[in-house]
Length: 294
Image 1 (cartoon, rainbow, N blue to C red):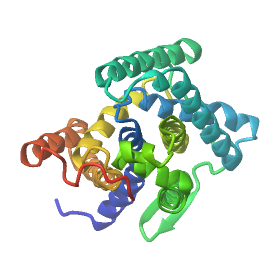
Image 2: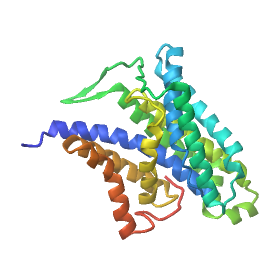
Image 3: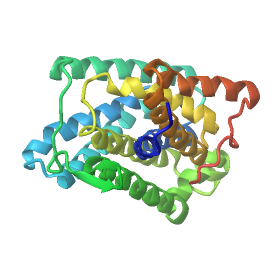
């Protein structure tokens, strides 16, 4: 059977957008690891929180996408502030195992709490875009996907500016590169860590809110993605944000191509197969460990 170029282009377009949304999630994970040096197993639940926020806020705004998106991102950022103050602020830099247990427990509480409050029934989310889209030759991309990709690109442009051209971003990079030297020049690590968690959860909430109109919303949706995100962070190099984002974009394309031609089991296993190969060949990841830059 000959390969249809139009079908391949359609899969590629879908894969790029999926990869950009994955990249938002892994950028937040890499940010938290770089600044706090902990693995946040509850990070995926902020994806779920952003999606549910979008699902409930959209009807309040008459299905108007933009104010609902802004509100969802703001709410998940504030949720990150609460989680940091109540839980992560009490975890020391050397308490890696304790951080894992706390964030795993928090993940379970959030998932089952959402299931209790909203039930496990998947929700469909409608927007004012409906099913309208843009036709480029034989390739059709819905406006929800186009807007999601544009939002991810805008978020990365903003994140690049924050990390490279603001005092806030320079403080985060300084903590990630040399905590002791940062303390000597007066940087307050707890304030920087709180801001990093809020920024990371807002990025994850943006991904969830953007995904909500594209797939069903249900309590376990964050857990379905978070282990892939961990694998991507490992592939890119722990704490290396540019490496993690690059790995996420590649995974989005691979999943779309594999899903278009093979069974879904191969699609879900692609990232973990890649992780195992990378760990065997380059234990520190494809890119240098650390280096909080985009």
